[in-house]
Length: 516
Image (cartoon, rainbow, N blue to C red; front, side, top):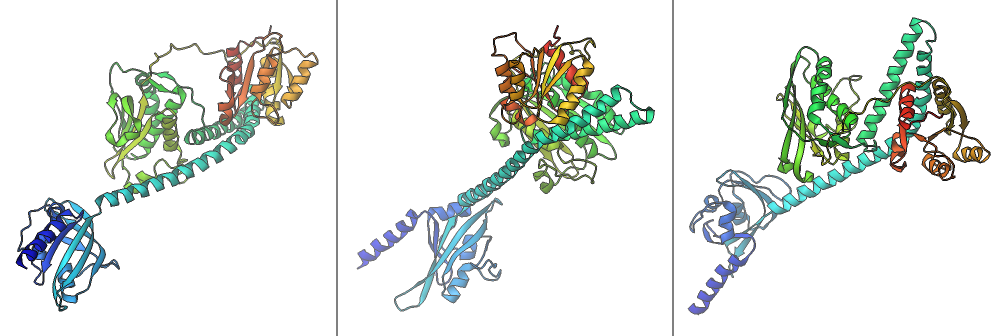
């Protein structure tokens, strides 16, 4: 009989050692009589047999299944020993001697002898740390997916509206530009034309920002000397920021070029500088830094290995709290007063960074200022030499015949007026099919200027058909909204709507479309 009892004791001690949870056993006086190795690991201390339950467990909080906290004057074990009830599936927060905390699932079972008297209790603590991390990660991924879907939906909306919006702006800008160029009216009228053109330009810029945020702005990636770009913008940023803000440059020497779109990167830097200025209404320091980084910080794991060019814009302003920081790149989110901003500046920069295969990172604390880091990939190509600006005006003598194709009558009218002023004889067509019929009927042209997204045939397809006819090669200029740029053949020149005559003249000069 004694041999059997010894075997049973040996079996019981070894049984709790094989369990995956932390287990310890108390007698009716709440004294620990057995525990496994995992219990010692979980509490982060060296427990001993004979310890009281309270001493063994140390400091921890335990909640009932209904979510209420157990009374501080009674330990969970004492409650089980007093009531003889089971304590099932309660979450506890264990605080270890080193200050770290572990979330556990607790089950405490009373133990009775053959006569029904309670002689102790078994405590089982399951570590929920990994499970909690998985749940938190799952929640974060779900939230990221929700935000991604929301942004994608907004991007699709922006893409659908942008083409129509640009078509609406095109005749407005064309008419105002013509009135200004021909000096219609007096000085008062000219000021009005200029103001209206500036407003139209801001509307165009707003569409560009929306499209950059939606990642539908066409990117013309080249090798960009970021250090030179920032140096060249210093005077502009200084004049924009005002005398109360000190501009500091920290630019590493001998930096390689980065892969970027020069014009959009300039706009991004200016947007970040304006945001920094607005965060320092009473003055401060605006720091522009450019440096080479061999690897991104570990928390930017989606960037992959370096090297990178890190462009930073920092301020000593008010900073952002966690709630504001979490929403900083959301479109139209702004802490500025109504009318003081569109809420698209950071969204645009964020979209640009993503399109370039880089990353936007924002570090900020209330009262400690904000630093925005734009991470860009290093270019394997050298920086191209500056190309002389194309002529913005052409000879007013006849430059030949231009076939103008656009299914929007108002857009077509405004563009035709510009072409006539430039010296072209213009033949208009409201569709690609009609344009082809004109050519089949013997129309000779010197240049084809066409919208891209039209009913029936696109401008890109029209260009291909025109130059497949086996006659002299015809220069082609595509007039496009930003959203259709992906479907335009790369070899075709394009001009984004809306535009003024100087833009059109420069594009035609770049084509060499002199006609004669």
